[in-house]
Image (cartoon, rainbow, N blue to C red; front, top):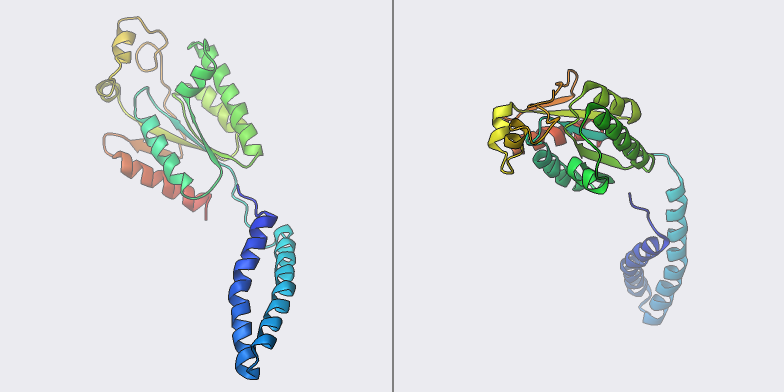
Length: 241
């Protein structure tokens, strides 16, 4: 969110007056054929109108009529580990930045790096989601939208996010386990299958599919760019008009 500062308003006034004053000098000189009179008229007009322009700008800055507030939204990407959530969310975030709206990016890995030893049990995950919900709610109070990507495998945790955070748009990045395994360059699925990783969604823990997602991305049928286009179009239609 940007604020029009006094300095910016003043510089806008000066730049415009350079053009306007030059025009005034030319007109006075054309009619009276006196350069001294033309310059004097131009200088007086400049001093008066720069001040008037600045005052006019500041008055309109305080008037809310005709302004439309962009309501902060929360794009919530959910899906199996390595379903493509982060890749799509990163590109969506980059595209939304171009719209010049206040927005932040939240990803499960980054948050877990900041808050280690959270745990992966159902209770731990649900508790963690409430922390994330509180963070997003705080950002929204400052008119900041969010693009968040979390496995969030349980219905109750996603429900908690909806209840805590306004304008939540659930994006279900749908991919089967086999497709996710193909993307698993770190071997996380192999470690889960061997028992090294416990509570791993889709292997030794459940992933409860969203029943009421606003957007569903079928990764086997939709490219990353197509998914990004679909999501950004939804945001432009419903929140950034």
